[in-house]
Image 1 (cartoon, rainbow, N blue to C red):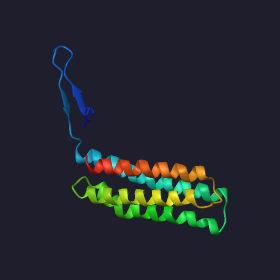
Image 2: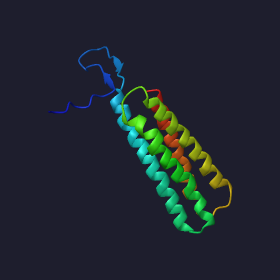
Image 3: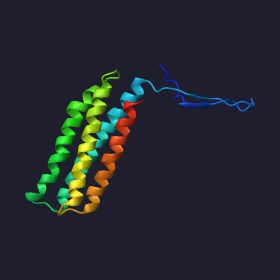
Image 4: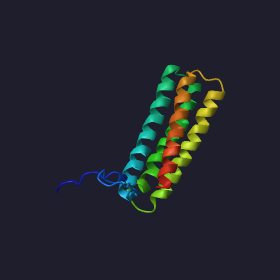
Length: 145
């Protein structure tokens, strides 16, 4: 079985005619499902990786609290948001909503890490805040695709 080539979402009129037309195609649910599932998994891995890296910068029992939001977020992303995203149907919106909510909650956690004293560098928390925002924007965009 051969795979068909990927079709562009925007196609412009041929150069032979003087009129140009722009057509916007709609992505199918399987493409959205694949992209959202990969984004979901990637966000979970990056968040846990950032927390572990920040913890190893200044390991202590009191500093271990930065691991809790990351681990909880990864569990929710894999167990709650993940299954609806793996099946390309109308229930994907549930998984995208959960993933967007988790991203927003992570942004709040990273904001708190930036605001309050922490033994780990603030650059790590700022990077997490940016990643959380990008994840949120991506999940919300996919909800409207």
